[in-house]
Length: 264
Ligand SMILES: NC(=O)c1ccc[n+]([C@@H]2O[C@H](COP(=O)([O-])OP(=O)(O)OC[C@H]3O[C@@H](n4cnc5c(N)ncnc54)[C@H](OP(=O)(O)O)[C@@H]3O)[C@@H](O)[C@H]2O)c1
Image (cartoon, rainbow, N blue to C red; front, side, top):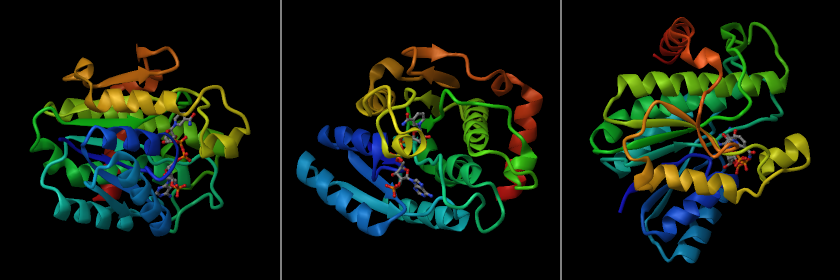
């Protein structure tokens, strides 16, 4: 039995992946931003999987202090983590910036998973063969620190793509820094049938299960054991090259220095 934390598991591909992993008998740590939706998700997954080891954590990822609080709660529930899936993410949002003035997609899709993972590193490092899966996207574009800071305003599509490249750059960096942890950046497939895609595009190309299945495989399949610092593109069905900036050491270093200063 593995301890598996999946953020954003109250809906979409994170929810389907959580259900599939629960059916295999793993201890699943769910996460959502809404307590009532989280409670109902816990009940549904327990009932369907007949697995009682399902627990939930609430944190709005637009609020970095809530992420820190959640990390403390996770640490008080489990001493080790086998798998962390940084899946929670947004495209559209009613507000373009969070309370601190940071671009909303950057906060939810990049800064919050970065902070959560940093806080949970001891739990991952305690576990041989632990894995971190970061939900990237085929949409990736050059990161602008001024956009993260909210100094310049950029369109939603650009902010989403930049936040996903930032997540990918950090994934590669973390893989180098943490050789005991396997870190993969994952494009789960483009335009999967989920709430996010319905709201943003109004149509889909593939069923949501396509994304859930690859999260499941990367989380527990022996085929992926020990593979780290790579980008898996589920549109092509294999490991592939991410955006060139993800391999630009100077750009990665600038992003990481900025992020560490901001979070610490
Ligand atoms: N679907 C695709 O085609 C596609 C393609 C490439 C990458 N991705 C990535 O895959 C991940 C999952 O996407 P999805 O399509 O499954 O989306 P989804 O159905 O909208 O699910 C997103 C999940 O994240 C949670 N979430 C959203 N905003 C949050 C916030 N501020 N704080 C905490 N949790 C929050 C949602 O909570 P609620 O249940 O409360 O809404 C939900 O559990 C995302 O990172 C997305 O960028 C998806």
